[in-house]
Length: 139
Image: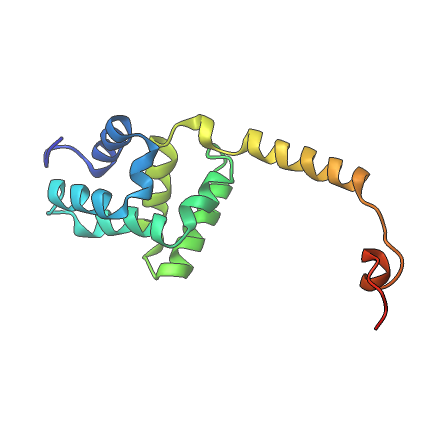
């Protein structure tokens, strides 16, 4: 890792070396990226702000192969952080390329839909007041 390589390559190597746990250690990730790329503070900020603003979580809930979804995440990053649109899109594209494809939510979404469908089958409608349903004596 060094200043000769891009922020994207450094991020890819950090994820390879530390695993996804590095995403939950913002101090460590911030320090490493800033140390390795002091000449690119704007790009480092955009990468880190994607996590801090919660947009990375939104990205994980989309399909990274759909350009429209990536643009939507970039617009969200711009609105939450005030980052220039082109830099926001760059950061979203970097994250979509360096994160392991299996953590994106195609399967997660289908599991959520299946779980919701199961919940609908199991739902019961309760008639009465809370006290009646819980069997609490009236005061």
